[in-house]
Amino acid sequence: MKQLSDGLSTLPVAVIGILLMLPYLLTTSLYAQTILHDQVINSDTEWHGEILIQGIVVVSRKATLRIAPGTKISFSRIDRNGDDIGDGEIRVLGAILAEGRPDAKITFSSAAQDAHPKDWSYLLIFTSPALNKLDWCEFRHGFSGLQIHFSTATVSNCSFINNNEGLRFGRADLSVTKSSFTGNDIGIRFTRMEGPVKIVGNNIRDNRIGLFLVPSGQNIRDFFEPDRSGVPWNTGHLQISGNNISNNIWYNLELGEKQLWDLDITGNYWGENNPSAIAAKIYDSRRDDTLGQALFEPIATKPFESQPPANATDPRSKTP
Image (cartoon, rainbow, N blue to C red; front, side, top):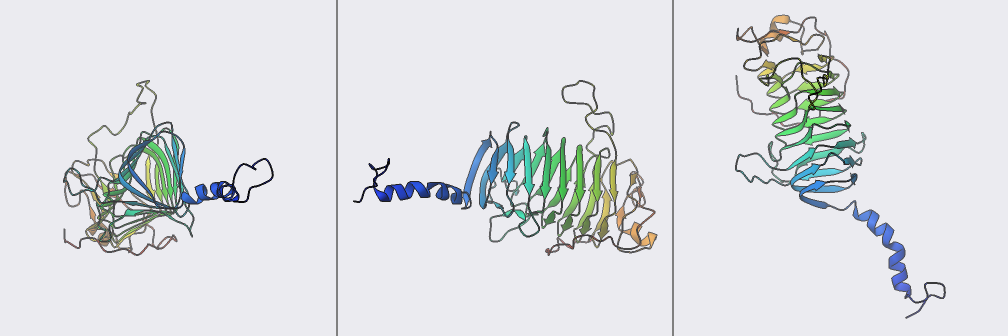
């Protein structure tokens, strides 16, 4: 076999060729499907291409998970405890930066051919100390597409389609803008009324329930840092304005059991301008005197310009 005559003269030409190609082979391998089982990510990591998750992936506090534009993340339908909810999950304790593009969305969905809501659990951002960013992402078939608790995050230009819940959040420093919630059982479910939380410029339509506020059983104010320093963790208010909230099958807004406080939800477009018709699609003290009241006036009299809702299958069309 022919040998090279330079410093690598002891190696055959074929071997040298493989060595020269190795960086290319390693790079392109990141774009092939990667299968991940139960595991903890302990160092900064970037995902590309196709990722199949068969279990629970935890991003530890010292790690940042970056997801490249166009990455497709799917979850195998695995139900270990028989509760009819898939166990696939990404749990972020560190940080996540999932920033797609209009022409290269990052997708989270079921791997099943006959995909359904609850095929996987959720992308959960929990007690994260970092600023988490999700832009141009699409969530399908989850129990909750995305959950955010005790964390700071921005969600923009995202689509939540055919999930049990599109987004669920509790106590958070959160911005949700220019996103669409369509075809879910519940578009957005939340348990807190303090903030700062901004939900502005979104389309929330064609779900069974658009917005669902259920109290967590905790006090509405006076939360402090986990280190018990007495320093407030987050301050501010919940802002839900400038959204198109309409055509949800049961209610555009529902206040859940023991939700005693009034909710300021002024400045949204409700699909029509008749206050009586708008109130008819809201479940609050007008239907149950143990609940608070949704304060929806003044209203926007025409739709806000925002990205159109993605195609979605209508959720259950039961009557309330």
